[in-house]
Length: 391
Image (cartoon, rainbow, N blue to C red; front, top):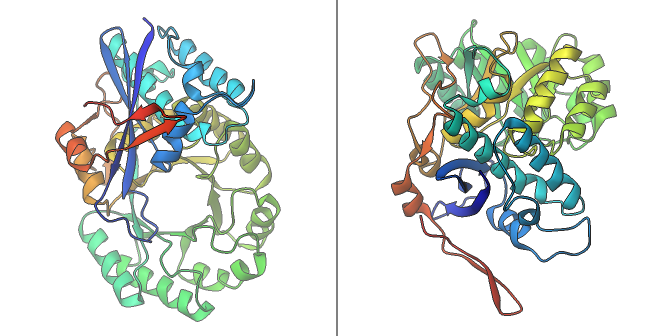
């Protein structure tokens, strides 16, 4: 069968607030081939990613993503890998192409899995999917009191591990951050697993991050995520060497396997966190998972949006029993919570299970797609190159 159509649906909450919540808008991708439909999602700015699909060619290595996808045969996993590599080559200088490719690649795996009646993880070569301990992923409260309340709420909801990130953390004094960390620890109790995400707030400045190590260690944080931007490999490695058992985590900003490889090889990470909606899809995410396992670095999914994206993020490492953690969006926007049919709820022990149905095992709620759909149009020289498609 051949890829007949690729459609992009720009979805958004009525109001997008200036907070670290990436679930306030979404770019849903629909791929059609052989009478079947596959769905994917990009973790990216929707309009910029749509433009990368439709933009005019600038030169031979800066073609629109559509030039490498439409009309391509799609009959086996090798076809998906070939298409992924073709987009990388033909859109080498189109920097948004990685995000656009991510949603397409996810949708292709979903479509092929449906055609073959197999979950994606089996197409990737895994015999079975191992459950992952879901850690509730939430933002820090604006005050320690609010962070304490959030920690209590998530423990009462059954989560044994909670990650706090962004918000005011790292933007005030060392004492402010210590107050936040102690509040999180108190709310979680002695046996709760505390994970901390600094959201790249310190750029590459090791000194600022170093000042927070005593409180992180006193509160028994298991990891410090993204103290620095993804490319600051020397800063990561230096802080990891000083952290006394506190492990570094990062990688959600990686847009290719090679960026992930560099972080695994040179950043001193204990955990590599990959988003299938950013790295170029399930194809390079699985490649990164296999490489991390060979290098003794634990692979963890990154996802903060819908359960369609959650399923996609779990597939690349589903077959690895050793990689046993899963980020779980515990405070999704109404858009994110409404968008998927069949949520992947943690079981009574706090584990999330990868669906066994064909493809991703999660379908979009088309009623929700209609509610949040943004009407958009892109014109070039008076010609319409994109218009919001029919659902």
